[in-house]
Each structure stands twice: as structure tokens, then as C-alpha cells.
Image (cartoon, rainbow, N blue to C red; front, side):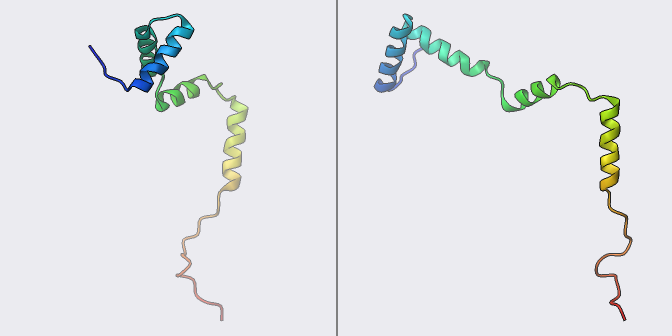
Length: 86
């Protein structure tokens, strides 16, 4: 397969290849391959979530207590259903 690239990009790749003592083709293939080896954003998030430690039972109890403390009382009457005082 032949890929046509702009001259300035080719010169840049030639410079990188010379510095790394590799062929132009090796540098181009390695660079392209690295793009496909990177995980996408959803995959990165999932991997990070899987590395998190599992919470302890005490931490879960604390979370549930904080949620319960933050709950507002249920009000069956909407703001427009209330009668004005007097």
C-alpha cells in the first residue's frame, strides 16, 4: 500500500527516523500502530473503575447515613396548592 503525505510531513518523519536510526517506514508504522493501541475514553474510565478498591461495609453504612440525613421530608402539597395565610 502506498500513502501519499505532504512533503513537510515526510521531512519531519525523515528527521525522526534519522534520530532514532530507523527507516522512515518503521517510524511511520510505529506511529500509526500507537494510535490504535491507545484505549478509547470509555475503556479508560472502565479500567480505572475496575482498579478502585471496594468500599468497606462501614464506608457503605456511612454513605447510607449521609444520604438519609440529606433527604428532605415529603410534602404532598405543591407550592401552588398552598393557601395564603389569613
